Length: 264
Image 1: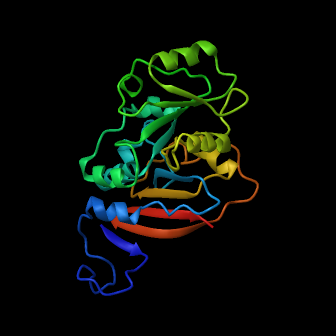
Image 2: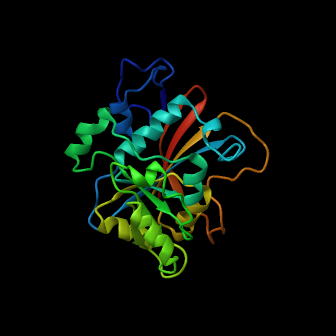
C-alpha cells in the first residue's frame, strides 16, 4: 500500500525515488493511526464517518452487494474503521443484502479500545422505519454489544416489542415513521457513542448528506467497470447546493484508491 497524499514531510526508508512509499502491506496499527478519529472539540458531540466503495463508473454494488467490487486491502480498511468506531450504523436493506452479523472482537485492537474507554466491540445500529427485520438472526440474538434499532415514533408497537424480545435496544429518533438523521446522532451520543461509522447503504448515506450531518467520507475507488444501473454511494433527493469536502489522505494498493475526505 502506497501513500499518495499527503507526501511524508521527511525522508523515510520506505520512500522510493518517486516520492511515494514503496508497495508493502501496512500494519493494522499504521492503518489505525492513519484513520484515527479527530480529537473532540468543545462544540461537537459526535463525528460521523462514512465508509463506502465505488467502481470507476460509479456503482456502489454489483448484484446488490459490495463484496464483488472490494478487495483484501479494502477489507483491511473496513475492519480498521469498524475497530475504531463506537457504533456502526447501517440501513435495514443493507443489513439484509449484506448479511450483517454482530461485530467480533479483534485482538489487534483490543488494548487500544480499552485505552480509549470503548467497549470490546462496536455496537451495530440498524435504521429501519418498518422494523421488518428477522429478529431470529445472530445480529439480534447473540451480539457481544446489544444491537440498536433506530426507528420513528410511529413504528408499529408489535414490531418494537418483537425487537425488544430479541434483545435489541429500540431507540426512537423521529416523530413520524422514519428516522431524523440529526436526532439519531444525538440519541447515539446520549448512549455514549460519539465515534460513529456508517456503511450505508446509499439511501441512508443520502439522508445523512441531505441533513448536512456527515463529517467525513472514506471512499474506496475500485478499478472496475460494471455498467448497469447499480446505485451510487448516496441516493435520494439532491442537496440544494453541493457540499464541499477536502481531501485528507490518499492510499493505493493494486489499483484500488483509498481516499479520505472531510467536510470543509
